[in-house]
Figure 1 (cartoon, rainbow, N blue to C red):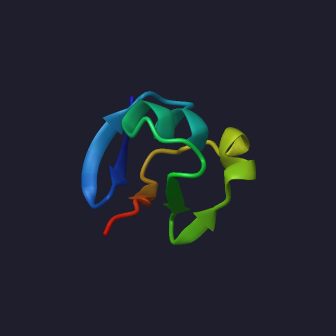
Figure 2: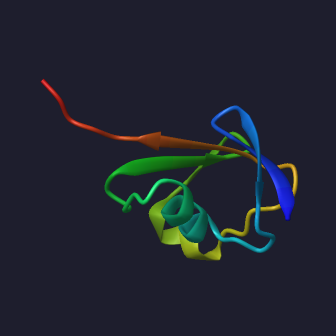
Length: 68
């Protein structure tokens, strides 16, 4: 287990998770429904499966929703 900060909260997650696995595990969102930011830089969907989350990383997952 490693410690990361997700949306400003310290959380323990499994070591070796990719951004794709993290988003699916934490949010259940698809590529069209959220934006991910890792240590201050946007991670585009095409890089999610190759972006490994490391101990101490700061992640923001921003869910996009429509409303009215």
